[in-house]
Length: 538
Image 1: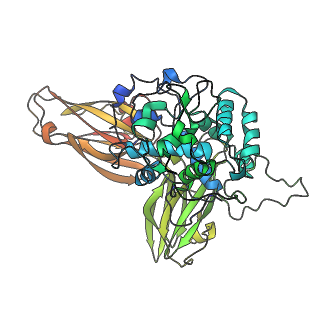
Image 2: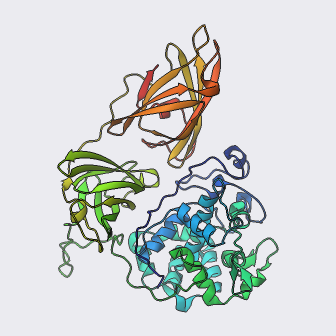
Image 3: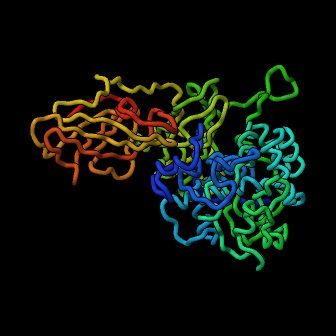
């Protein structure tokens, strides 16, 4: 079995959090076409060369770009083997710690990008059963995913995968993400050579980089372990035993020692997340009725709780299901509890109100990658907490234990309407907004214009917004007041070189932020999007 180590784990988080990399975002746009996707393209974190299939122009024969959809497939595989999800950064940290990278020190987006890359590799291979593993099958299923029929791909998963894995994918509607990951080209964007060129020695005959070539195929996509630039085998990798190859790729899934043993049969797939497309009904006398006693409902979502208890605390894994027939761009649920929630939150944010006498109201909202849920789909988010009323030092946490103060089944989330349209004008300054949207966030560039006849030695303006400001602004400081109900007041003040503005002059300042009301994952930011709660002025 892929070794499942039960302890306090982080939940899946992957987001574009930095504008630094090998190239700037504007430079990257010259190297690849924009992709219409909810997932982040690896090339946006940095782009290099060195392969026939590095750029979009080389993605032939059904090959596709590497995106964070691979991380989703990877965490679903971890869920199947009984492990909680992890972030791309955690996968990247594991790779750097195990000599699977060019450098020992991560810079800029290195750890995030390397994590996405190795998550893709683990998801491509780690599903294969020990007894049926064959490198040639890696090539055949990748070629079939890229050029063939999805049904043929799933037939191969039944034949070569761990027992129950195909059923797990089908029962949850996960086939598309799995197949999309099989299509991804490992050489894409240059990360395989420029950041994930692992130097770890394997069986004294190869290094990690050589074995990583298992998923690189010949031009005709008939052979694994190939070097596509010259279309010949990666010779050192062919000297590594097949058992060690599979051990190596399964170490990516469990984040274990790449040279240790992780092989054995898997047990039954987990119950959380096995959402059958045909739930039992009262018309089927042979099937017991569904027990909803552990499922909680509010508006268009249902909530189930799983997780682990540890000494004085817990890790809660929440399955939030969209019960509607449309995508939910934002969701929230609330509950009373004797427990407190820590700052370790993944895919959600938790706002807590202390009600006194050891009771708290917790408001859980989707955040970053966990913010939107497609119709009928389930999103898994998580947080750590400290026990109020004791639950024990080991075992599982359930909804009754987490919601020990009661479930709040009816509430309204409202955002006060803007009193004025967000024009960005006041008596002293006017503000023009430009910037870029990215997955879950934005970069705002502000042109602050002096509308007076004299020099402004200081300036400020305020606005209401559902968005939060992240990181260190440039040329300004931002003071934020949480108004509740998902609304914030931001007071922007000029600092340093941008503190004063000559008469009729303009200074350019900016900041990064996290989206409140969804603005999209690509495109441009404007004043209406940034000042979505209303303009206040100075």
